Length: 169
Length: 180
Image (cartoon, rainbow over the protein chains, first blue to last red):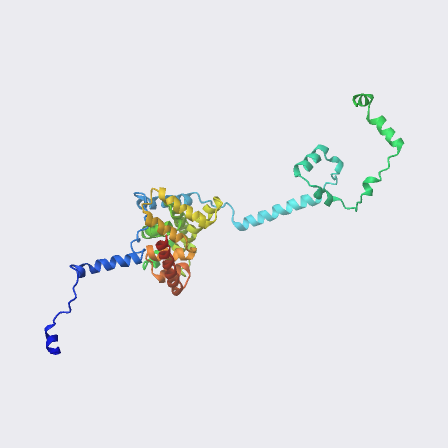
């Protein structure tokens, strides 16, 4: 009886929505695109001005041609230049050796205001100045200054006038 | 590309150099432009770099020994010029080159020569998150569809390494686009 019944069941009973299979391909592709966000982005969105490529060649040819026109041709070859430079250097050296000026600049030749400007302008710090002192200095060097009275009198007599004292209150 | 050997011989001869250079411009200007444009982003910068690239090619063609293909030599010059241009601009603005690149992408919104929408802009931002070499590989493969063999010669990297690099770059970009 079972077998007899089975012969009568020709259909599985499953149904498919209308147009499902027709639209399957499209919906699958859409889903693939969703999973692959790069799919639709082959165009980066960049644009080029009109006629850009058409006029580019002309622009470049003009640049390289102008370079050729202004190309400088050396008047002397490199070898000749080397000889001339060598001779010139020898002459300068000889003049320097035989025409040696014996006059030497001393510290006294320098203008004081120039030295002051230099020190102010160079923005020296106390540390910079300290580095110039070669002797070992102690506090005694500054404390134990002995002024002899006669020297002090001579200095006042030679370097000051009565007006200086009148102005002091 | 197959005619590059003939073209190279003509470029090295004083008699045929001019005509061969015009042919070279005709053959490669667009390809090199797009290669450069993807690196520097703006049209004005791409134009500057493309001009410098062709001037360098013209000046140095006599010294090209033909150890690599002519087109890969030109691509290398274009790549170097574009990266140098980008770095110089970043230095001038006192910025790191990554930050400068992000700024260049932000400026695309107001660029008359960018017609991309938000998604295309997002893609550019995603590319900018990649290391420099991966950016190059991605742009060359994805937008310009260059062969791995040719890319290998231009970037002096094995085909296997390039495939791996492209795969990683694609995954990172997909992740960025999905998350942002």
